[in-house]
Every structure is written in C-alpha cells, then in structure tokens.
Length: 438
Image (tube, rainbow, N blue to C red; front, side, top):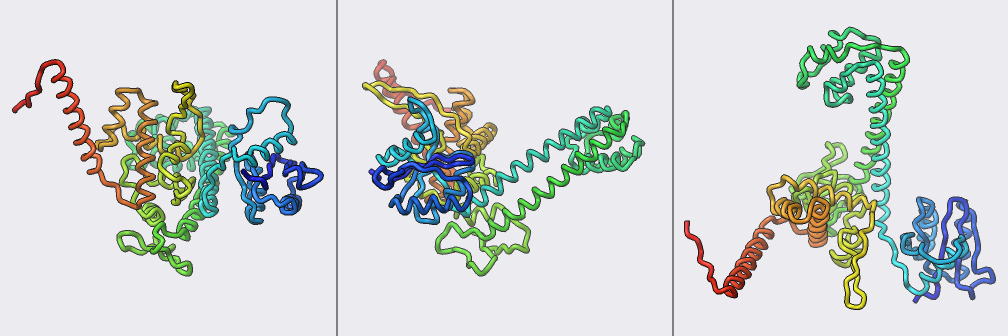
C-alpha cells in the first residue's frame, strides 16, 4: 500500500494530476506543459506530501516531467498503457489520472524498465542514427527513380549505387558527362560486370529535369551520410567515457585511456575499436556467443545497459523480453493467452541472432535446426532467442566467458537419458538392447 501516491495523465498540451482526496481541497488539478508549470506541478506534489506518482508512457511527452520529478526526489512509476486502459465507463483525463492514482496507491501497478541516464543518452543517439539511415536510404530510392526515368540501368548492373563505382558514375552524370564509354571507364576493378555491360547500361534518355532530381537526391544522401558520421562520433565519445563493468577496473575519470582484457590501451586518438569497448563495459566478450555480432551487442547495450540488477533472475529478464508464454491457470486448467506483440528492440536483436543460427555449426545452431524441424520457423526463432537471452543474462551477471563445452556435457546427459528411456521401453516389451559393434 502506498498512501502518498499520486496519478498523472500526460498530454501534449495539458497534464492532469490527482492526489489523495485529503491532501488538498482540489485533489485533481491541471497544468500546462511549459517548463515553469512543470516545476509548479512538482511544488504542489511536495506540498501534498506525495512521494511517488504513476503515469503512462505516452510518446515522449512524459520525459521532461519524469526528469523534473526525479530531480525533486519523487519516485516515478512509468506504467505501460496496456496495463490500465481497459476500464469500463466514460473516459476523460480527470478519470484517467484518478484511476492511476488509485491503482498505484493499492500497489497494482508495476514500473517499466528504464536504464541509467548515461545509457539513455547513447540510446537516444543510436535511435536518431537509425532514423538518419532510413532517411538516407529514401534518397537512394529517389536516385534509383531518376535513373529509371532516364532508362539508365547502371543500378541494376552493379549491386550498390552508393559504392565506389556507383557514386563515381553518378557524379560524372551530374557534372554533364554523357558518353557511355567514358563513364564505363570509372568502373572499379572489383566490379563483376564487364565494361561492355556497364556501357550498355549507361545508354539512356538524359533529361534535364531528371538530372536535377538526381543531383538533389545525391546531395541529400551525402548530407545524411555526414550527419550519420557526426552521430557515430558522438556515440564513440560517450562510449569512451562509459565506466568499466568491473568495479575494481574502472577508468580514471581524469584520463581518457582505457585498458581492455588483452592489456592494450585505447585512447581517443587511436582508431575506435567497438568490440574492445563493449568487452570493457560488459566485462565479458559477448561476440563469442554464436549469432552475436558487434552491432547487435551495441544495440542491446544502448537499450538496457550493462547493469541487469533490476531483473532479479533470468526468468524476469525473459518475461520482460516477451520471449516466454503468458499462460495462466484457472479451476485447475491451463489458460493459453495470446502472444503479445512487442516493439522491444532488444527482443528484435535476440530474434535476429537466433535466426542467424540456421547454418551455424555450434550446439546452438543444432538446437535451432532441431526446433525448426519439430515446430516450424516462428517457434524455433522464439525458442532459440529464449535460450540466447538466458545465456546473455548469465554471462553478464556472472562475468564468465562463453564456454561451448558446457553444451557438450549437457548433450552427453541428454544421450544417457534417452538411452535409459529406450532401455526401459524395451524391457517393458520383453526385449533387451544390445550395443552394436562396428
């Protein structure tokens, strides 16, 4: 029970706040979303002796208020809107904040996971970078469209129009060159297509309006590439400053040099080596896990950080990832609930890692293929992602290196168990198993 609980309904222009009825004659008040009004809201909560509040995670509107209340020492319970929205009756902002206040006061709400502020900063940068990549790819599509309208088939002959050969040819076209043979000489030696094929693909109907569109799309693409490079530089600086996962090996705050497991020293002037920094932060080399690539680990780190202490066990971590069934029991019968759809980026990373095990020769690759043969691809991806998430949680919390031999021991135990089952079945049917000799 939380007698000093409040409830907040967040909107883009107005925020409604409810406190216990005995704390103020107007137990529900509204505030604009200007910064000074948010501070006035926090002052009112302090006067009403409210030490914890619950509010829904509505878009990004909750972030300024969350930070102000957290700085004032008020505990903020960020609630998933799906957990509280199914309430019968009329809906209004006043009723919503009162309902949130009541549920929070009787302890029926669970706070959503939110990593530390340093991780949130890296998460914002990487999510912004993802948006920049998407917008940059849009301009690549515009370049393809302009070339198609001029019937220039170079982007169908080479694999990437933004590669060395593609950009060189596009730059030459924008500059006014039209001779296909001269343009074909810009071909890089690594291109598989021959000079004759490239020459034929560069014969087209060069129209001024399409050249103008191609030029603007190329300029926009390069501009977004520069923005992506600046964003990556900012991420690298923050990763340099991030503390070690090992408490006794934390980097000196006054020094920018860091030491990795192999004893080498990394400074900001040296080339940035992302795997070494991730190993330093997590305290273990996660790239040894089959299916785990460096960028995938970076995505996971940017979403949850390296501290998993908020998850008491691997079961809690798996449940947060929505990689386990949500079945319940009623009247002695199992109730199968529908799988909830999730946009969790960490879950997506684990699923992609599981899907990449299809051709892997390790134990986990064999596990994925056996699950795929028995249950189909969707179930196999979920089961393999479940296992990968447990391995990830165990390695990060214990800081032990990944050891493939553990699965070999498990496979020996499984074979012994299957042999014992076959022997028991044969004995029941009046037979005995005899070991075959080569």
